[in-house]
Length: 313
Image (cartoon, rainbow, N blue to C red):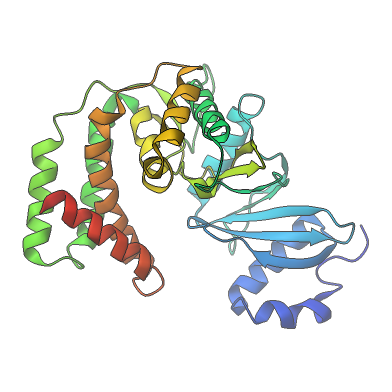
């Protein structure tokens, strides 16, 4: 295969070491050796929070992505997701995968989806396609006769799943909020958790369906990425981050999205579920920021603190 990462190590390692610590550098080196890549340059991918992702430009000019999930479970979910979604939903092509070793939980070699992350500066036709994309994903149901070890089916106990997530993050949130705000947040959750309409599913749910994971190329949606958090469950949770970061800013885009979604499958009453899930998203995001490091997630933490205060005060 020509020069691998090892053989160009003297050229690249100093550049890489400027950005990555020794442990990361060695792990990346092992992964690239496993895939026998002829690497010309390597760069980080922004907004990847549950995996380490690198964009690699090969010597032939092709761009590919190396993805290293944080845990073995996330690796297994991602692997099963690619198998389940292939041929149904627009996703990158999985070129290869490695099951890892004692130092690395596993890795994927992925093709490039042409374009860039979704922004609010798009035409309604793009929002329509985002609705189609999400609805198409939600038509995917648990496969018959296939045993899944990574992707859990949470639908039959969905309320318990949501509550378990909430109170798991509450342990971290308590360390961030003042006692009065924390108490009010818990009281609000207990008061509104029984007001939700019947669950919608079981469907394949992304759990992180947000603009950073939706790739657009001009006026066309290229597809979606990142499947380390996926489940089978109730669809309403998948609308929250998209609404938070995209739909709420422009009524025209919001309307186009809904029309696109309804062209594939019925759309739940979003107004009935957005208040509850937006509140829990703000709460859980504070806990997530604490777990991942307050300093490096300071802006995200402040945004969600402000959202939580609006919900409970």
